[in-house]
Image (cartoon, rainbow, N blue to C red; front, side, top):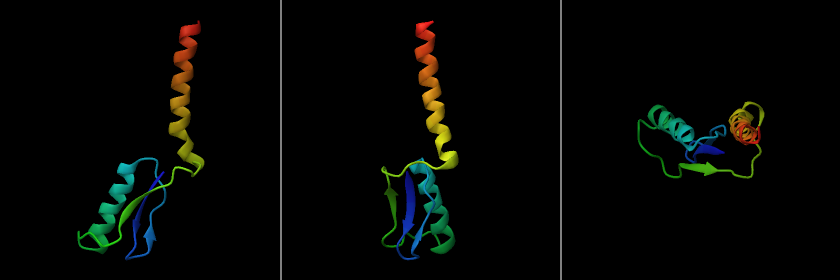
Length: 76
């Protein structure tokens, strides 16, 4: 899971499955709050220990379904 963090604003975005999404959130924040400048202390946080919640399971289940379908097609 990835989150954008701006230390200057004391802001952390909601977690995202994709790093690119956290980077998009950061770009929008920079444009709106900092006129495109990069504030000191901004970063992309990686939280690999966090368990996905709610809709975040969809991509995981999709990959599991593809793997199961591939395995079952070889069995039958």
